[in-house]
Image 1 (tube, helix red, strand yellow):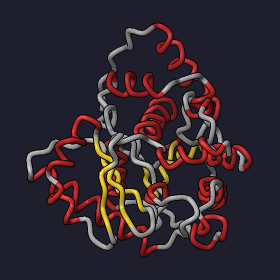
Image 2: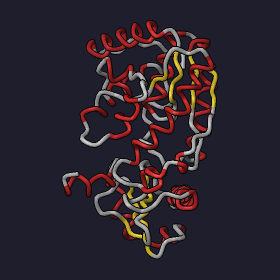
Image 3: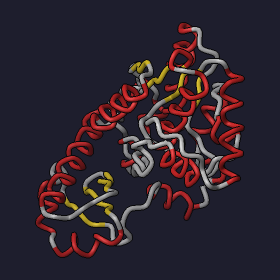
Length: 284
């Protein structure tokens, strides 16, 4: 992760320079580090601007975080030589989160900042930063961003106008392994709104996704994006659009998805945030 190739996009170069300036002005920062492409890039940028001693990576551990994501986040932080903390969060103690309404992400992010803000204070760090990018704030439905703003978290990537594509381009130029990492939202995002969140339900989803991914790879299907959506009594599998027809032909591969009365393949394929489609149709 030591490559320092300058980006060829002059607009991107200007935004990276502004990002560096903003991070230096902070002086020190705790990065809310999920392990995804955005927070990984922010963490790498912060280390470049502030040095290893001025940055702490904090990955919140709870039943909504897949074990695989935690392992990859830890490995990435080690590669940067940055201190990596794994504080526990207790979203299940928040009734609004468990109820799994349209504002679930608000309660989740509120819990995260409830833990990370005092952590930053104890460590003597100036701020807590999230990996929100410029594309995120133009999306219609992002209650988690509102919760983070209310809690006083800073959003350096968004503030300098870095889009998701630019984050990936810059990550690639810097040689970050997360440059092309698929989106990996928390396990609760797989549960249909209105169905209560529980550790048992989340464990069932994680087990189904992990087992199905392994089965598909063993069957010679090179899957990139995969979600098992929990609709209550049945599971809906979302996979890369170009693989949908093959999976619908080979339905025996779905036998490893257990714990549901039925399993179906979404004909439209993987879409990030597909659970929000019903909300958009209803105008909520």
